[in-house]
Image (cartoon, rainbow, N blue to C red; front, side, top):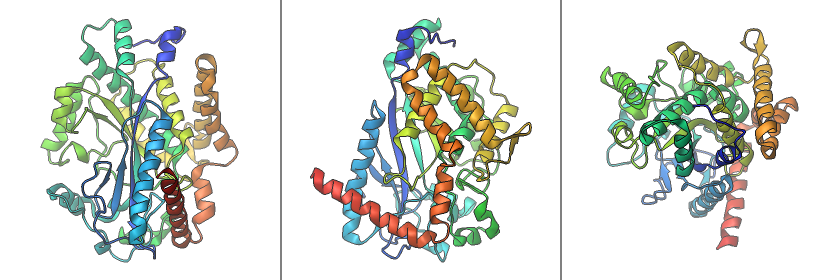
Length: 419
């Protein structure tokens, strides 16, 4: 749909958003080894675990502001770190794991039905399950969707909402390379990880984000999805399930997912429709005590608003394939490498950010800082991946453990202060 940004009411409505975060982190001992203890919060829906018993997942509530969701993430960190202090454990502050000696140190999470996790361990191996990341869940409030529906001329609100999020998610997939490039923060990895994957140790210098790279946690094929409508989208995923290429929709390792309210399943998505989108390409950032910076979430929100201004275009098989290839390019450490048409990754990123900045100056001057922050990050060689590599590459495990200890004490002090 065509959005009139010159309409002040419409443009101001788009500044609203609903935010939720899911953050994975490995638990480690005081020696920096992978914890072998059981998950310390067996009945807390906000502090769960992912694939591994020692991989904690923090799940915030949904908030109508970036500050609100970050405050909740910080609160949950405080609760978790207070608990870990009694057992002498820490949260590892990186997306990439510390040194480990054998995959036997990677215990599959002890849940009621382990069929899916056992299937994943056999298909992909347990080693890649150690990658940790952050998922950002985003939606527009219902009054925003209702306003856009009213000016769209469509006849069915549910169909409009599904089409709206399908279109937005396809555009975010195409721009996933830019998000990866700007937020990549996992440029250091221990040799043990590569060794257990049978990979050359020289690969440790290739990526700014290992988990979003060609050796990241991804499907053995490039998924091609139908973005025509929600039924087509779901049917295209089910075809991979029926062919045996996917166990379920949860095995679709894609940068952006469409999700329903409540239980996440394709049946629920079909019956309830799209409630929000999930961006899955964010690294845990060790430069932040909670793994993510406010400025990056604000930029992603601005990017979403900007993408809505772009015209509709069919998300063809070729465009989907190129989008996934570009995301892999965005995970490279050397941003002077060719991105496309003799343009480097750095040059392409600055060109896109210039367009976003011009859009912001025209319609959202109060958000100018969100775009400028990203531009300055590139121009001043302050990409997270560069800072992390320069700081930690020579003594990753020792310095990484010191950082995790520091962050635990910071969180404990906040917890004590807040009572």
